[in-house]
Image 1 (tube, chains in turn orange, blue):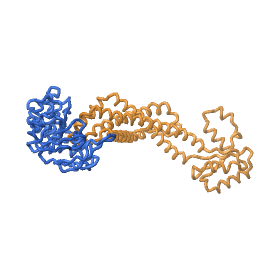
Image 2: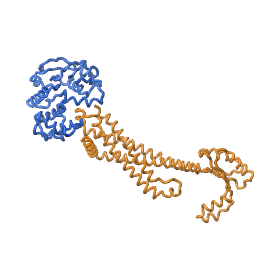
Image 3: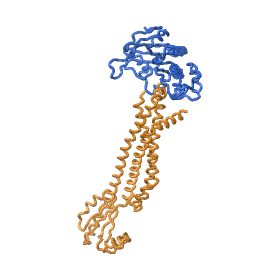
Image 4: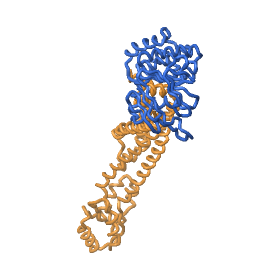
Length: 293
Length: 226
């Protein structure tokens, strides 16, 4: 009976105040979508970092006219450097072969490039991917070295863009979250006001505090959960139509690992939890101020 | 049993205390009038006894419980031992007489079976047999107050507090309400009634405690309005 009473109060309350309820759900949904998006981005950036850390290399390109002495000297130095995990020399000819296979679709480009145009290089792999900048600086001015290209730098640029997007999503999530918070507080106050007679009598006859407050808190939690489900649908639709269709090129190129349905599904319990906790806490705190004794 | 021990209540930002050094002892089963002009502090007493307010200093004991030092989470259970009626009845307009009484039972967790058994009984007791399904607007003022009394009494409280219960009623209806309260008093329920209706006080000839500007100026068994 009590459960039935509480539930009917919840739905009656939400319905009586339906415009506010809708506003609350929409704000909640936007906030949670952004939260979900930034969460997905965060996971992806972690994945990428782990993935590329095992792959990233540094290329030490040699001047066209380098001497065997210079090459030998560099090889010894790099071999003795205990930061280096793997070292491989690529001659001009090997570089040309690789160039031809990599660009076999661009026949004109391959035809117009002579083997001498491609520099010989040392391909260096480090034990600790964070040391590339340091090692790069150490070898920059060595005799015979033309330039050093560090893949980590390129990756860092990609990561900083992704981090920027993630932070932006997080900021929007927080701002919208605040708006949702205020709407929850307001909705509950309006609900409490519209039922002040009942609340007054309940207090007078000694209904327990949780019994008085539960319908209001559940109202907020219910709206929050609907918001979470909507935000989940938004994320799923965004994956299906935006990521899988429009941006599929990036994923197939292997630069960014694709966001799987598993990842999307994993956000649902988190979004539900965040929505429920935020609504419940806000509702409860609001009522503490409104319904005192 | 109600005990006021040197009770002072000063509301925030008030220039003088609403109640100052008030002491009184009310036995179980007594019928007591608190009288005095508007603003004398009568209603403050009701609010203290209901634990809607706590005293600034002094002790308030109701049914053996020290109200001033009561934890707020214990207040609901405490209030179940007290019934309360007001000048403005405080009924829910969208519920019938029976539903208004049942509401008070349901929100403290009594089952519907209990309500179905107890509600007609108590409505019969207050003289509303046959009017269970009327809405407040279909009832006269006196009848509405009877519903409120039924709601206050349905839990068989030890104490019934009445804040100007006849304030909105004509003299004849007021007398009927007083007869009802008297009957309830005879069941052993302590009744504390705040009023400034001199007719009623003079007719009932019960204990009268007079308050003036926050101080108890008279405490007289079988008193009159004066």
